[in-house]
Length: 226
Length: 83
Image 1 (tube, helix red, strand yellow):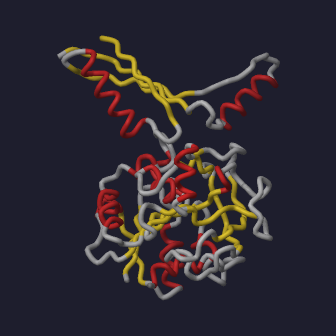
Image 2 (image 1 turned 30 degrees about the vertical axis):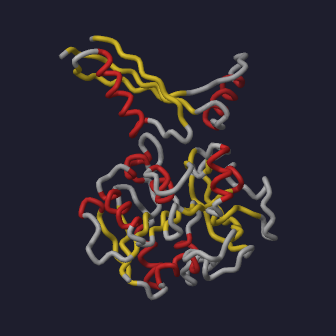
């Protein structure tokens, strides 16, 4: 398993993702987007950052970069794809996952630990957890408010494609525990295949025991070990 | 071929929270202005050559569909003038 961490101009969590994956014994390398995906790519991470300076909308430019055609094709072949933070914005902008991530209700950049409730454990991204588990993973974003129209949200719930919701330490999904005003407290969703997922919180920042206050994010990255 | 300017205006759909517009409204109120609501929008002015205004509008419409707007949260309109 070699995970390609796709680096765009302005990505800044690409090294963190590689280091976190390697800590878990998963082979990973950074790939400059203009170079395209290496043939041996068995997994893909779209890392966090500010690709293209967040011009137009966060993720809008990177989502239309040629490498994303390769990412979409790989996703359709069943290659696991994880979008984190700016990578989540890129994923939704590119149509890999439903909805949109837009300006936080606070209109501010927010960098803080949050609690997430694991909505389902039968996906590669959550196999390390039990449904209903509460994990602590940090967020760091200004445009993380999950927006989706009512019908599409109903479909998302009916199809069981919500992966994580913001919650309090006890696992209660409340307005007070919603850091950015996301619809339904949604923090992460699945694409049409459950091998494709995006989330705003940073699992790679909750993986390395030497630097992280929580290592709860390890389970998400372990999807690439399978 | 004629020269046109296509103006694409992209705005949040009604009902989608706009925290930046709300913050701007509050700043205007702090300056003593009275207002009921404020909505913001992005406006793109695109100079292009096309056989006629319809063709120019069609191209600008596709630009909005494919990049300038995000259909999940945005509405947009296109207006074309000859230069």
